[in-house]
Image 1 (spheres, helix red, strand yellow):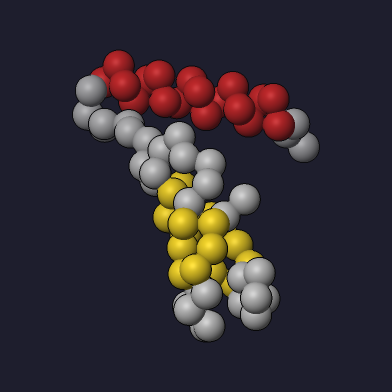
Image 2 (cartoon, rainbow, N blue to C red):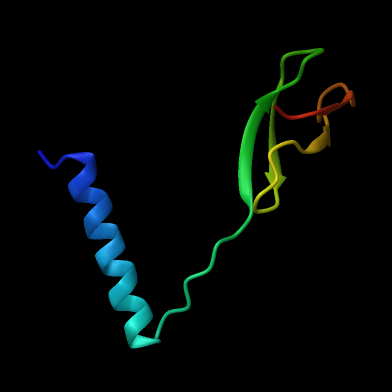
Length: 69
């Protein structure tokens, strides 16, 4: 069984090799947050830009406007 540290090191090594070859562009994208509505309890998938911790969204079930935690 491979521990988390070994998996992390392997992923970093592969990323470095890919960047050295310049064949693959590695970039960070938006984060997807799965959150529950505070009013009806429905799950919502919200996209958050890189670096944002709180994102405004409207529930897809009850249209309640709120902010993620």
